[in-house]
Image (cartoon, rainbow, N blue to C red; front, side, top):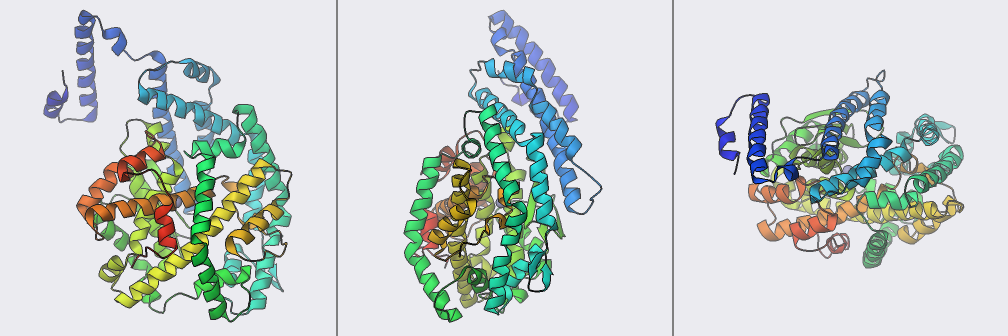
Length: 540
Ligand SMILES: [Zn+2]
């Protein structure tokens, strides 16, 4: 018996449709009672409670994201803390959690939702611990407040970064790089305290140390992750050594130092960049590229703003409402951040899963991967020539510049992530020694025993997140390879349909590996990222 034909005749308000469904369900129930099966059809009370709590969470999170969006846009008198408190109340009600844990569901979807809710509760208990939030708030405030002393100048983080990227005087860049240690002096001990607290809380509420709890929550296994990192390092080593040799030649130095890396790439920038990538054209171009795939971004709210972060997408209501903020960068930097945020927004808008927790608890690397699939379009020579009016030579130059920068950044991010895992594994070690040893190996530069590690603000504010960026790049290159095989290098609506069905509409129903196998025909692999980074498969 199907309700669908009946449903087609009803085209009034959602409320009326819902009540007609209710009547039909009751009717169905009576029919089934006669057949002796209605008891099995009636949802168990605990499942109904789970439904209700998920709906509450969806509504609270919508309020939370709308509020955060306003705060980021400058309404600093607002606070999302009361909403966070309400979310905590819904998620960590111990009486409900005990019942939920005991429940024996047979429906795989309910089993999945049960697991996600229980995990969400543990996560909330750890991250909302008052002692931990106080330490993290202190770290974040210090990050925002610090001014870096370089010579007789006092610089913000953005100014320090700008100096490292653009100042041609190598001694000044060295002083700027060494100035990064100032934030470690201010924050290092507090971050170490947060690490110990997170480990203690994780062992209190789960049976894992914090880093492993988080990694599993994000859908990854540590053995796989470390093996991918090893493969990426080993297989991109020859190309990375070539890059370092090229840097030495261009900069005219015998040895590349940490204060040369960003400078080299910032000065790779092309004279045509400002002209071909004007800020005002960014959002229309993003919409145009989405349109080519059959996606409509008209309902997505987007604003430029001065932000403490690169840019962001806000998943207000999955499948219905997403918002974007872009920081006021210039040229290709602006486009890169905006396209990444747009990729996230597409994931949130196109999401089509049956319950809030399944929609919201996608594996983080899948989300980063979908964002990067859209970003990679920006660097395709075909797209640059057609949409941005670059000459073939300019498009080739952009592609190479992007690839080499990614080569350094992916290796640097792996080093960031590995340092973090090692520090959580043994918080008594000196984090600076760990960080410098691993960064020397991955970036091929001497770190001069300088404690610069706390300059990476994610260690304080967003722990065990960095690996998702690297795995997200693996996901993206694997998807791009697969779609190219099916549809060629110029994607249209058919490619968009497949991307949507297999990736952009997907949440937490399956594991990353299951999604990748179903969508691309093979398990998640670093092969396509490595091919791209090592230049054997270029974007040209
Ligand atoms: Zn992202």
